[in-house]
Length: 539
Image (tube, rainbow, N blue to C red; front, top):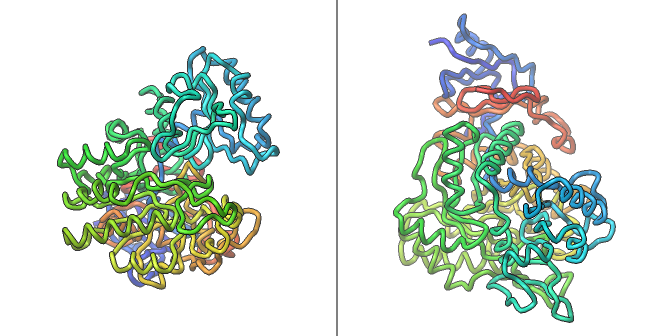
């Protein structure tokens, strides 16, 4: 049988068990039908075959981002970006907010995302009075880059029913000054409760997921592990968008949300729907809880106080027994389980819960995970190995936030978002960007996993550096394994789904410090070319 599409003259990085590098690939329908030399593949070219000459460029399995927020990323594209080049100060941000207030109807939300107080000239958050001066008719919400902290105006506070008499929610802080007045700053669960108030319309959400899907495809991402946003509605929305082809990436959807995730998990467990239900386009993933905060906030729960603040060790959302009650039950019912755990204290608590769950209800090949696994000290890694846990580190984090990590955690950066340790200790790990917290580009993630330097050039735990091939595997085969999909994707092998990405150069030959400058030339998903040379292809 002649092939539908062939790629010849390439650096075919198969990511098979031998890390073989071939020259050419053939595709029939939505599957890879042959991998080999140019000579072997050319015999499969027929009159109707589409021939793609790679001219020596790399072709890899489609990238799998194992922790990303598709819906949150999408809605952020509809808001003001604090990461825009022109925003260098709080004043610049206030000007953008003011301009937005002048063009939208009264009562509509004004949202900004990606704020980082360490990156602006004033080195501070905007104040509630500054936001009130922009508008008392519009609720305003400025969300920090970590998505765990926000600053809002008084109108937003009124909508949420918050004032000087409001008590802190469990796992969160409604900040007040020395006189007891609200500052507008909301931390952790308080922020997430406000995020629920700043809701979006159905049409906004559909527009948002389409934008996100297109951005991911243009970056070579063909599969994502959606890390949660707005609870049950997210599931309905994603499935409808997949059916209408507004979402074209494959989704492994975690059962969790940015607020009240414990309620969502309980409802899903009670419903009888378990991990793995679905198809190649959309599947139910692990049950997920938040256990602590943001590594850059900083609000992660650590066993020892912060280097920057000897009197502070972060925020915990739940007690250990509470985590076990929720996720232990999910484990018993057949779910893969996971948590957002950044600090070593939060990681340790979760590992204790998994250990207890496996003792009470043994299960082989459970593939329970830890999202982020920020400070993975050696003793915690040992326990991960013993329990068969899959950590999902965020390779690009040290690039944008590495200097912040050194300030807050000191030498603990040597075990933050580990990679070398995991490989050497035989721990399966997969890479995720956590976008929109940082850049979703997998090539940046691979670059940082190899180089371990911040954007300022500072070395960040360089002992965790890995090879280019090992970093590629984090974003391909390992991601497939973390979602029980290694038999159908994650490598370029005969019979697997034809999800591929073509780069503009040879990733195994370019200087390691230039990996982040590589570009995606083509993205192929399900045997169809969806993106080619900066152009999305409509189906």
